[in-house]
Amino acid sequence: MSDNGQRNIELPASIVVRDLAKTLEVSPIKIIKTLMDNGVMVTINQAIDFDSAAIVAAELGFEAVPEVIEEENIDTEGNIPLWRQMLSDEKAEALVNRPPVVTILGHVDHGKTTLLDAIRHTDVVSGEAGGITQHIGAYQVEHNGRKITFLDTPGHAAFTAMRARGAQGADIVVLVVAVNDGVMPQTKEAIAHTRAAQVPAIVALNKMDRPDANPEFVKNQLAEAGMVSDEWDGDTIMVPVSAKQKSGIEDLLEAILLVADSTEITANPDGKVFGSVVEAKIDKTKGVQATLLVQNGTLETGNIITAGAASGRIRAMSDFRGKRIRKAGPSTPVQIIGLKGVPAAGDLFQTCKTDREARQIVEDRIQAQADKLAASSQKASLEDLFIRYQAGEVKELRLIVKADVQGSLEPITNSLAELKEGDIKVNVLHASTGNISENDIMLASASDAFVVGFNVKADGAARRLADTESVSIRIYKIIYRLMEDIDKALKGMLEPEYQEEVIGEANVLAIFRVSKVGKIAGCRVGKGEIRRNAKVRILRDKEVIYEGELASLKHEKDDVREIRQGFECGMAFKNFNDIQEGDFVQCFTLELFGG
Ligand code: GDP
Image (cartoon, rainbow, N blue to C red):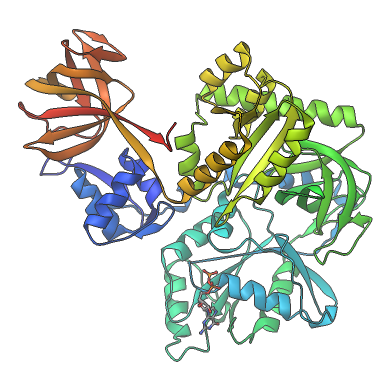
């Protein structure tokens, strides 16, 4: 506690609005509103600096203190990707060098995307006029006759991908720092994550063409952040570049190869075949298209694979240029078709002997995920999904589609595939005929999808499971209405549109102090009902002084889930202790688009 009775809270130098909401245990909307009141416009997945976060925290009754990012605080264990662990099972004598896999990290606007494009076009050796136009999430360039693989996840995604499960396919990180802007919060975070992932880093001192470039100053800042230039006896190579003018790119590639040579970047091309999913989507004519990064063994067309919650036989394989290939060795990014479901980026893929075995593995996986979800009671509610879409964790609206006949299934899935809002697309994970079954709900729950039915019913068992797993089911009789709703859902994801419903009101009649708990408000419910899990706001003289959640709801001495009109109850509020006699409590729910 601080002197003025506010609770202390540690906040990092930069925090994404969504994470701040979690830390302060309030809705992200509340944070956005508070920032707006202070003249700062943000979206939920935007990072704000400590000072802004501190203002918000103060308004919500917290005293913010700066958090020191200690390297030890980063979960190094969890950061070692599965494929690396699997690679360590290969016999040392079978290992041979493979091309390094590079990912580019850095603060927003420091030039990651421009640099990736510049590298792509500097690939003079490949002699491809006009460069590579298609983006499949990864590409390769050749420098001095040696290949380098770049993971091409643009913008913000590249940063979060580093932390995401298994997405750390990289052997080397290129940290982009704009020399006119210097070390920024995300630069520091990138440094910490690079260390945690235990991969070597190279700094690209970008925007050298700018008149206000100050590389020496930036090198100093980097040294302070623990990344010391090799010119100063440190171990990090720093390469001045201008992504915009495409200068210094060759030096950067040279540096990457140098670092690669000083690290063990190996695999067994004849060993077990596995790797990571870089990205996956449904193509209207080709079906599921997935970009895979082979990390060990040699992947061939005709191979049966499992990838996350999907399996299938590779019908065709092409390289990042779209050229058909039959075989792909370690560090090669390939695009494949033939999967029967859509895996998630970062999922591990591996080959299986038979189709049956592959299907069994996937079924077990889905079941295990469903069990885990149920155990952690993590809800795939629309509201939660929405938050995660906004946070950039999920870039698609996942659907399971069920229809009465094949004839209506096709037009529905085809039209759904065309729906898009900004970066967010519809991804039909599974489409089939028949009523909505428990299996559909299980798949939806395991993959954060929701279930859409056309002229079908959900059987009783499916409804019960959907209830316990909080999976949303929507059933339609008119295709147009279905499309309209999904389109709205996509739009809703970009523009949060919650509908608020006040479900109850209560007057605070007395205040009790309880040691350890703080203040309890003794209330009488004047209207409707107060629900333990709904949101509450407190009004004093008609002004909202708190919005959040209940920490407890009691009737006499018992904890209760709800309390109705005319009854008295005791309420305590999360992170709020300033309740007074005469205050007015409103209980409300938030629903995403209509319901
Ligand atoms: P990202 O957010 O890190 O992917 O950054 P972008 O690649 O989108 O670049 C952000 C802005 O900086 C864009 O306007 C680029 O044109 C500009 N930019 C990128 N590299 C350079 C550079 O080397 N010099 C200059 N002057 N501008 C650059």
